[in-house]
Image 1 (cartoon, helix red, strand yellow):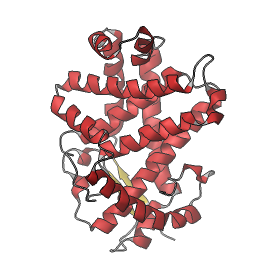
Image 2: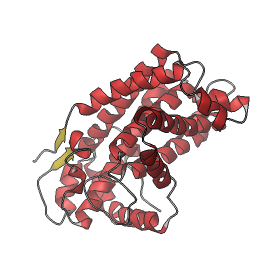
Image 3: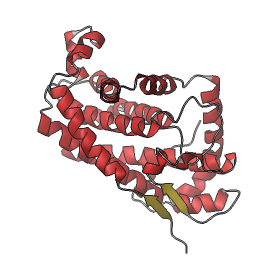
Image 4: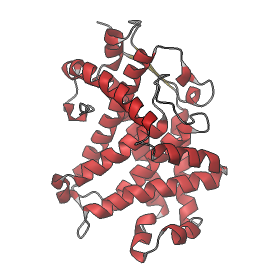
Length: 295
C-alpha cells in the first residue's frame, strides 16, 4: 500500500501571525475608520464592518488560530480523502502520490504552472477544492462545540481566509481564460467557493441554535461580506497594491462570465467522475466534508 506525500513549507505560519497582528493593530488604531464611513450608510452596518467587541488580544489570537487550523485541516483532508491515490488512479501519467503545497513556490518559483495535462490539472484542482470544503466544514463543526458562534468569530475566520487566498493570489494570477492548468485553482476561485459555502452553512435552519441571541442569518451574512471587504482594504493599504486588489475582486465576482462557467464545467465533470472513488476511500469520521457532487 502506498502512502500520500504532502510537501509544504512553514512560510504560511510566519505570514499568518505577522498579518494577524498587523491587521488587528490597523483597525484598533482607527486606520480603517475612513472606509467605514465610505462603505457603511447605516449605523447598524458599522458594527458589521468591524465588530466592536473585538479587542486587540481577542482578535489577532483567534485570527491566527483559526487561519492556521484551517490550513492544517486542508492538508488533513488531502490525506483523509486519499487525493494522492485518486490522482494516481485517474491521471494520464499514473504518477506517484505526491501533493505539492510548497508555500513559497506559489509566489516565487511559480510551482502552480507545472507542465501537466489539462485533464490531470483538473483532477488536482477538484481535489484542492474538496480539501478546502472539508477544512471549512470541520472548522465550523469545531466552533459549534462552544454552542454559540459569535458574528465576530465568523468575521475573524472569514477575514483570515480571504487574506490567505489574496496573499497566494498576489499579482501573478491574472484573469483566467476558462482553461485548467497547474496544480491549484486560482485563489479567487477558491475563496469564492468558500464564501458561498459559509453562506450556505449559516443559511441552514439547523444553525439557528448556534446564533447569538437576537442575531439572524442576515447578521452572519453581513459578517462574511464585510470581512471580505475589510481584509482587502487592509491589504491595499499595507502593500499599496490597488491593482492586485482590483484583479482579485473582479475575478471574485466573475462567476457568471463565459470563461468562469467553462472552467467550472470542466471541474464539475471531472469531480463527478472521481467523487465515488474519493467517498469509497475516505477514512475520516464524516464524509459530509467531501465536496458535494455538482448538479
